[in-house]
Length: 271
Image 1 (cartoon, rainbow, N blue to C red):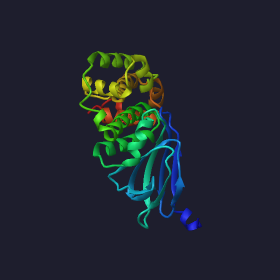
Image 2 (tube, rainbow, N blue to C red; image 1 turned 30 degrees about the horizontal axis):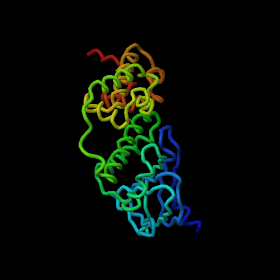
Image 3 (tube, rainbow, N blue to C red; image 1 turned 135 degrees about the vertical axis):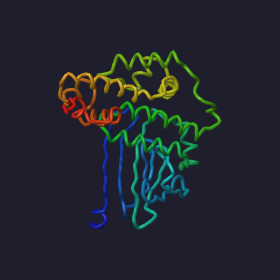
Image 4 (cartoon, rainbow, N blue to C red; image 1 turned 90 degrees about the horizontal axis):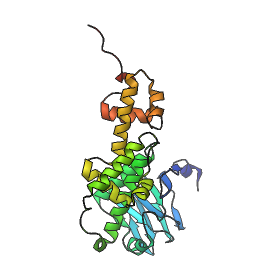
């Protein structure tokens, strides 16, 4: 590869603390072309700029910006930019937690999925994955993505909407209330409540009009408000209310209260 080509490559890769995620990979390539290769994991890919042309199972495919591509494990594929400007992509590599081997055949037959709901959810997942402390949100979004992918790839096996289950929703809320500071993973909640993670997210959102991660962050912000009014510094408050750090607290505090923690507890000036 020529040095000038290498200079126009941007890559970020990491492994978040989210069950089922093997790796997150964000890249901007202008000239690089992937040779034929395989992965042990599922490849869930979106392209934000440009497009990728690739071969999978001896058939050519493409990834315009409104497409979500799902490449199954152990099936050879390559990849190259369609235009001289290259492409910018975001990829999450998944183990078999959310996608079973029964989906490999359907994914080979139709890897490029043009579904606005799925595309939006994958984008939201990546937003959560780049923010420390948002593991519950990422896990919740990922389980809904897995459910959506199964519905699209095996539509005859998935019909109708999730049933209401207020008792299960209440039990999950009670678990979250008990773990406001230490937090609770969706995987752990599913094990404790003996329910599928996607079903948990759906019944909770249906019952309360808010996702589990949003509920937990709301409870944490409420606690933070009380501590800030006692005169505690924001950095200390972030730690004591379960946020990853002060910037994590600030992001959610501003979203829910409309002001930063540092400005929240100031007394009005006397006129």
